[in-house]
Length: 242
Image (tube, rainbow, N blue to C red; front, side, top):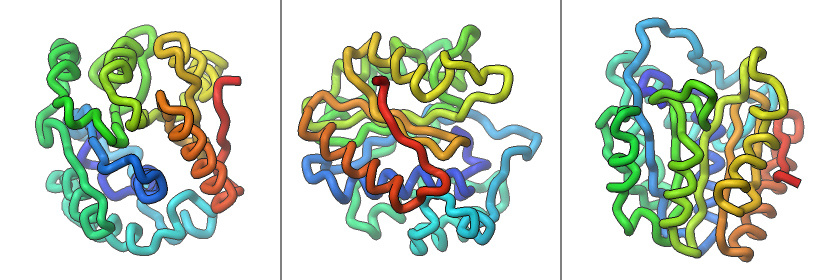
């Protein structure tokens, strides 16, 4: 993830979905945010901030007016001064506790093992553990923008039965649009590494994958995702690896 995009339309989907999950699944006591922060680009492509257009298009999160107002204000800040950690203020106003791992420290591909090994144990207890790489899961030539399947396996293995792992993923670009990089393809790969059947939710620009050890949490999560899809039927698709 990059600070320069904090507050855009994609963040609206991301943080609204996180809020829904945390407010509706009672065993989850807080958000444990694992940002995998990378440096801003000099080029400013990819900015998406038209909230009025997003609402007309039925994009996910647009029913959450308080979040829209909060993100819109943050996006007005000069691009080099945006700070994703300020989302903690919004969640606090909604009664949601947040722990942000490493804060403003940039993620380094060469030291990723140490980065994930040093995540505190309390981040992985009764938490929605959200990992936010710049692009998503690994590809053939992975870098700092990617989360490796081995990273997921280790993190999933450490978290307790009352936590859920949530992973951010860009929808694949045209050259990668085949089954391997699709939501179902990614889900199948995750299941091979974790032996867990993921649930995914997509707006055809980004998607999120969820893994839970506890069947009751998984069932609750499936109901939330199904309800979220009904709220935004024009944009949302959901499913799992089956």
